[in-house]
Image (tube, rainbow, N blue to C red; front, side, top):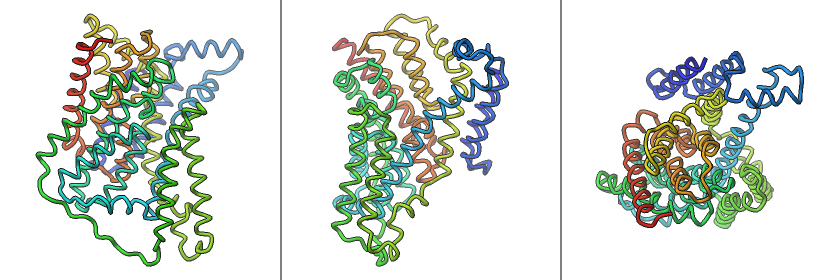
Length: 447
């Protein structure tokens, strides 16, 4: 069953990558793949599962319980809960951003960006994404910046290149901040890294990982771009004070999420949903008198614009990876990496870089979780710091390797193969450039 599941995952992954060739929606493939893999887990011999000791412990407390009963009420339910946290976070963030956009809040920002030179705008958007991601997170930053890019760049080919750099910048920015990415949050909460040290040790590497692709692409992007024409919509003319209010409230809500997580220690999606509830009430009050004449400004109308297929794709691919994790594929992978015949620190540099590259294919969360379970290094050891960098930036190599990439893929219908041809090589160069900088930094300054 171990081999069968691995083969099925590879076949499903190829179908997702060739979506535009086989004309089958990637969401359908991901959902079917997740279902089939979990069926395989259900019909496997329990003793072959990585989580078999957990099942035995459960039997001691609940004699006579069935394997399927335990599987559906524990591993499957736990993984579904973890996936649902990300999905509800994504739904809340997308709705808030769409609400700001509907109220023309982003127009207040784009109107201040006057440059039409492609290379200059590329630097502005990428650096802004890099630092925003450290404060918010890579997925929320990507949603906001993709929306902004639609207002600034008319030509789709140019816009997709910009969005590719937004993905790279958002993932790089999230890697050096303790609240910028799920994996850095995991390491921080588990006391593997301290906030100040992770920023000090990974900032330069993360910055280089985006600066190198930026420099390369700057030489390729010549000339000026055309901006979308500002279409006046008399039916949806928003007073400027309302645009400012919704923009400030919306951005404030997004910034509140990491603060909420820090002070309450509750999952970030609760802060996001709470912020959405606040904005919902605020906009309902603002449009109390014109609800019937301008229903498009209400959250109930905006929710209908949410890209449901992309959300379902996210659900399918994460649950498919969860099935592999439950059976033990990822644990076997981690153990095989640990058998590399090298000495420290070269061995652990290679392990963390391999995890980073693999995070472009398999979700980085279970990979990092597996590494945390295997190694017992002290807080702020270079292994944890380098792992935060590689797991955070490695997902940029493929578009479905990170939450930021999946969000952008859904919003702009980006083709998997197009991303591989145009962006993946830039991401690889940036990834290895940052890795070299981290290793040199460690050699010079020590731990």
